[in-house]
Each structure stands twice: as structure tokens, then as C-alpha cells.
Image (tube, rainbow, N blue to C red; front, top):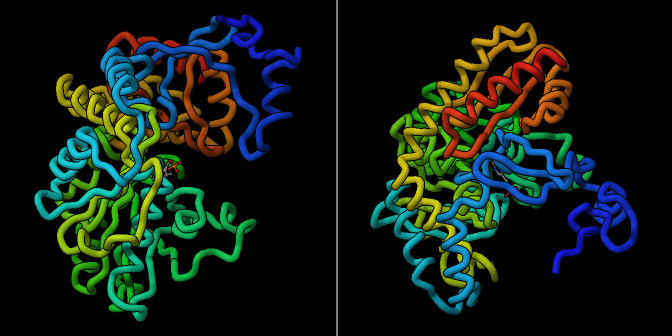
Length: 404
Ligand SMILES: *Cc1c(COP(=O)(O)O)cnc(C)c1O
């Protein structure tokens, strides 16, 4: 039965959806921009029937866009078989996904996979892995200034944003935040470092890539001192930057990779993939999750990875990313100062404080982009984005820049 008051968001109490959000949901999020009711491809639709071109993709999550037939079919099929069984049992889809993740990360036969339900949880597993590296004298974990690794207490301690941490002190101890320079790393690196965790591109900071060559030097220094190199590919991984994982661009082999966001096209799933000796650090009983790796989420992830391979979405991400970059720079707007990022993770640098106005104007013109900070617009469209969507983006983004 369809209740029309429900689709307009007033529910049964006569309140507007905005009132309901304010009165019923925890205040930890900003007021929602729109009430969305459905989507198809790179488009979503709100309760008033207005369509928006989705160039945020659920924050780099909706790899296949919305209502992709492959995802819909897999969800229906698996829901009718098994949704959840607990980790007392294995399921075919879980085993298949682990095998695939070992293959696409290059972790190979020595690799192991731990399944979680979100990015923060994948990084919590990485944190525990670091604590298990060596004895209690190896008690320092290095991370980078402005890094974002999630909001749970361990992940928050890794996050290099004092404003997010301050209200929740004391932090989990042992984490130090460095400038993203090889000199700073050389100075901090000693034999008491358990791990270094880095994002190849800091997405939440406005799409800011690591300096070229940093990962290569980080690999050399961590190896020399017995520290783990953990790469947080939660936002950059699963094809987003035109490769399966962005660190593969420098050809390094890390000790662990954390994955989430795009892996299951919007169904919650996270994973930590370990390499070599790091695969033996967590032992029976050391960690666990009730939902982690359940047959529903892992089936969807397999369907997403299948489709990325079948439709060659890695090449599409690289090619469409270049196209979008050219479109933005071609507008020659005085508000745009630079374009950062790789593939379909794009940061548009703007003049002081212009980004929020551009984001708001874009929404008014039927385009979803993300004003991640006062001087950055983040674009992370679905990996399936094509010519028609890029044409629509050109028109709508130009209108937003003109209006802002
Ligand atoms: C989004 C993100 C996280 C946190 O993921 P959640 O699923 O929100 O917990 C961690 N690291 C990076 C790099 C991210 O982009």
C-alpha cells in the first residue's frame, strides 16, 4: 500500500519532512538538502518530482549509480536465498569476494581479508592490526595532518582534524599526526613505530593528493623500521581514480588496505585486506563483527565488481575524469582556481568562501555537487557516467558558477 503522505514526507503527523528530521533525528547532521525518493543511473528524484544529476554519488559510494539492473537483480536473488547467517558459518559469496579482493589488491595467496560494515570499521581493524605489530614497546602509530579515517573512537584518533577530536577527548593514545612530507616522515620514523596510515588522496579535506613519490618513500621507510604501511583506500579504491586502488599508481606493495564506500554500490560493507606477514597478526578471537561479510552485502559487492570488469569502468573513470576536468577548466570561471584529484574523484578549488554558494546554486539548477569546505567542491559521480551526463553537468555547473 502506498501512503501518499509518506512519499511527500509529512508522515502521519502532518509535519513536513524538514520538521520530522529536526524533531526525530539526532542533531549530528546538518538539515537535509532534499527528500529523495528514487533514482536511476546518475539521476535522483525528490518528493516533488524534481530530478537532479548526481555528481556526488552518495559520497563516492554509488559506483553503479542508482537502481542499476545488475545490482537490483543480485539483491533480489540473494534476498530470496540468504541475507545473513553470522560468522559461525561461511557463504559462497563471502568466499568469492575475499578471493577477488586478494586478486585486485595484488595481495595474492599470502593475503587475507577481514569484512566489516563501514569505512570506520575497516580502519578499526587496521588499528588493531597495528597494535598487534611487535610488542608493547612498538607503540606509536603515524598518520597525516588533515587525514580523515572515520568517526568511531579508534578511527577518530587516526583522523588528523583537531576540531573533530576535541569534543571527544581523551583520544585513543599513541597516534601522531605528521605533515605529508618525506622529511617529516624520516624524522618521525624509528623502530618504535607500529604503523603509518595514509590516504593516497585526502577526499574529505577537499581532494588533496599526497605528493608524488611519497608512497614510495613511505614504503621504504616503514619496511626499514618494521612498521606497517596501511593505505586507506576507502574513498579512492574500487576503481574511483581509474585503477582498482590509487596506491597502485606508484607500484608499491602495502601491508594493509582498507576498503568501503564504493565496494557494494551503497550496501554497507567494509574490508581490510592484509598482505604477507601482516596477514598473520590478527589471530582467532582478536576481532569480529556480527554483520561483517554477510551473504547479502558480499553478493552485492561481487555484482558491483563484476559490472566494473564487464563494462571496463576503470577505463571509463580515467577517461570521464579527464573529460570533466577539461569541462570545468574550459569554463574559465574567475571562481575556479584549480582542479585536483584523479579519475572520478575531483576537487574543484574555488576562490575564498565561494564553494558553499556554488554548491547551493548547483542544487537549484538540478545538480548535486559537494561543497566540502569553503574553497573546495568535490565531484564523485558514479563510475558509469557518460557523455549525456557530462553534457548535462556542463550546462548546470556553468549556470551554478554564473549564479554564485
Ligand atoms: C568515508 C571515509 C572513511 C569512513 O568511512 P565510513 O563508512 O563513513 O565510516 C574513512 N576513510 C576515508 C578515506 C573515507 O573517505
